[in-house]
Amino acid sequence: MADYDVTFIERDDTEAKFLVRGVTPAFANGIRRAMIADVPTFSIDTVRFIENSSVMFDEQLALRLGLIPLTTPLGGEFDDDDTVTLALDVEGPETAYSDDLVSSDDLVQPAEEGVPIIDLKDGQRLELEADAELGYGQDHAKHQGGVAVGYRHLQRVEVVGDRDEFHDDEPNIVRGVIETEDGDLVPTEEFDNDLTERYPDSEVEVTDVENAFVFDVETDGSFDVDTLVRAGVGSIRGRAEELKEAVQL
Image (cartoon, rainbow, N blue to C red; front, side):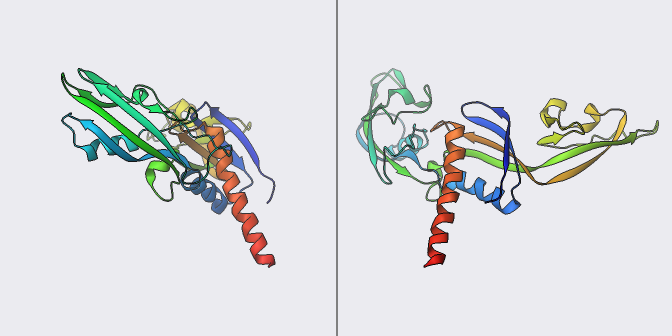
């Protein structure tokens, strides 16, 4: 694989914006697809209701439970199709939340506290057991740990002259990240995505930077964004190695 360069522009535990130089559009799209489809997460798949005297049908509650992100370690602790059991027992008047789920494994817990499941009235009760399975986004969307993964061309903005006194006041909208003539990387949100706000008195020229892409990545909390990106790239590397071995046979 050719050399490539990565620069983080914004970064926290679950969201990141970073620039990758030296990759083709096909490879950039491969990274995006791998982060969505090839990185496994735990998600509730089967629910056994012991008591449900709420106003909501079992099937509706099972759907809600399946959409609660669960922490997923990717260090080899679990294999494909491994199962972790979670239990919930809440009696009204009370609201059942994600952190009321009690897991059989400390490594697999609700990724976010305070996610409401259902509001129980006086005398109502919800008791259940749920099996969470390790699966892939390519098989079901509930296993997509990358909930928002996209990329755009890096765009270079160059000042080519002064605006005349009769210039058009129409906004010049760009989105993503621009590279200035000084080599600075500036998220377009900083000037409301309108180049006329950043360069009010200048004519500018915008061009796509070849083989340079800005990724916006957000996880559902199953793991941090670094883990998601590394696992996605690792998936591509593994596929490439499998192909190389198959071709040499």
